[in-house]
Length: 242
Image (cartoon, rainbow, N blue to C red; front, side):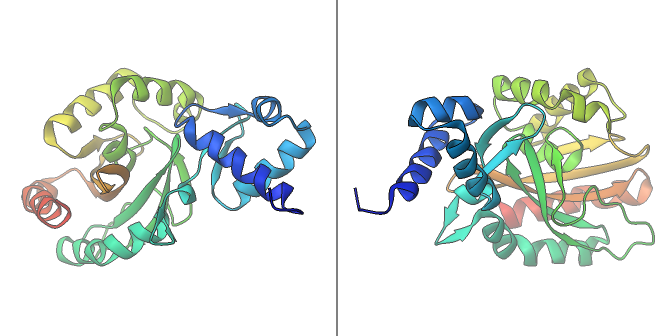
């Protein structure tokens, strides 16, 4: 151990521990006991990792999981990777089809909006503003991520997000799971009237080295215009995202 770097070692060992646990939440007590440090020291180091985006803290359950910035691409955060890799495409979708198009990354049980591109249609829908977070399951943007996880992970996430979803969704869990099945069949996320009656959206999964990291979402209103554009839009996303 390098002299004078004890706190650095402790911080990195905590990060390694939580990364190795994957999607299993970790408590302050578990970190304190595993690292053999006081809870106050563990809390201070966890707070630093959370502030830097390497961990995500669940206020309700008081647990920690991997944050979006723990995924690094050529020295850049996954948020930066998604914006730089798919931002131009999202802008083209908004311009060509007229619908607001958003970029999201997955962050534990949540998704975070990292970019939004305004469409040209008179009425625009958008589930989130840039920087806002929402629980997975909250609508079409998160369906492009949630539906392509395995059943066990989906159940665990929806259980943990149950109360938060109850406050925002217009549909029950059974209906949500029906859209999960539909999305898997379609090959992309689809949801209708989850947040706004008559609102709908598609979201295409975004991957990094084969791993699901986010989604590109397009929000619209039910109607003939959407139906006339849907097939072409989905084909455009599939062709350009792959």
